[in-house]
Length: 397
Image 1 (spheres, one colour):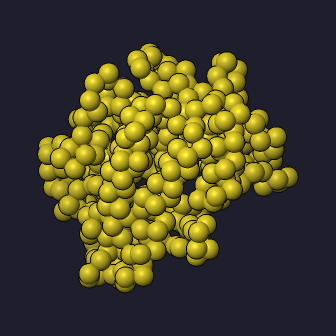
Image 2 (cartoon, helix red, strand yellow):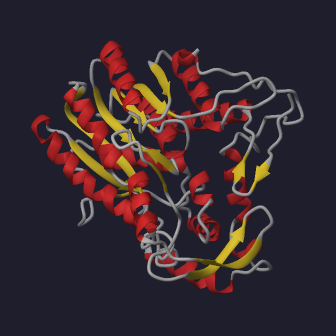
Image 3 (cartoon, helix red, strand yellow):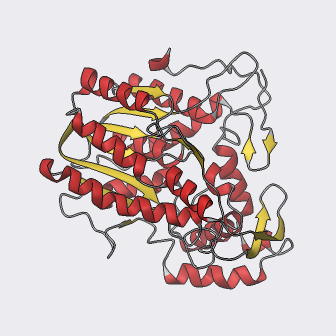
C-alpha cells in the first residue's frame, strides 16, 4: 500500500515501516560513531522500549556496549491495509539490525503495567540472560489499570489551583493562539500520579529482585522533565509535575530496596524533545520550537539519541560516582536550562506570534521531528512507492 501521513490533532494515524527503519538506522550509526561506552551495561531490560527515550536507551545499550537487550512495549501490529503503530516498526527494525550484528534482542508486546507481562519478562530473563544489570523505565502511557485493584486510571494535563492561560501553537498550521486550561481536582491529581508516578516502576523492581534476576550493582533509571518557568504552571507545577515528584521520591525507595545487592535507582531529568506525549501538552510545542531555534543557534541542540548517548557516557558509566543535583537527580537537561538559553527564550516568547514565529522559532524543525516519529520525512524514502505494511518483529512471530 502507499502510506502517507494521516493526522488527527497531535496524533498521526499511520506509520511508515521503511521510514521507521531509516530512523532507527540513523540512531544506531550515531551511537557507533561515538565508540564504546566503557563499563556500559551487558544485559539490559528496557520497559517502554519502542519509541523516544526508551528506544534510544535500547540502541545506546546495544551499540554502545554490546548489551543483550529485552524490550517491553505495547504496540499495535499491522493488518492487511492497515499500518502498525510506529513503535512496532521501530522494534522490528531494531531487532533486524541487532540480530544481523550478532546482538541478542528479544521483545515482549503487552501491557507493562500488568502482572502477566512482568512474569513473562522474568521468565525470558531467566531463560536467556540469567540476570540483567540495567533496567530503563520509560513508559509514557496515558492510562493504567492497577493489577492489584482492577481500577483504571487516566492521567490529565492540567494546572493545579487556578486556570492557566498562555500562548500555544498549532504546529501543523503555525497558528499561535491563546489557550486556557481549567484547574485539576484532587481526583485528577491522584489519577495522574497513579499512571505516571513511581508505583509501577517500584513494583517492577521488587518483582525482578524477588525472582533473582537482578545482577549485583544493578542500575535502574526512569526519565523525568522539569522545564522552565514558562511552562511550569501546566507542567512541573501541574498534574504531571505531581506525578514526576512521586517518581523522583520512588527512586530513593527503590535504592533502599536494592542496597543489599549494591544497586541504585536514579531519575534522569531530560531535555524537552518532540514526542507524541509532549505534542499533546498545550504551550509545550511553542516552547520547544523556540528552544530548538535557540539551541541550534548556540550549537547545543540534541535529539533523543544524542541526549541518551550523553547520559550513558557522561553520567551513568564513568567509573565514578554518578553526578546528581541536590535532590539526587541526574541533570542531562543542563544545556537546555543554561541561563543564556532560557533568557533568550523568555525574550522571544513575548513577541512570538503567528506572523513572527517562522523567524523566531523552528516550527519546521518541530514538525519534521514529529513526522519522523512515525517514519515520515526520512531522506531516501519514496513515499509515493508501495510499501509493505506487513512487517513483523522477529522475536514476536
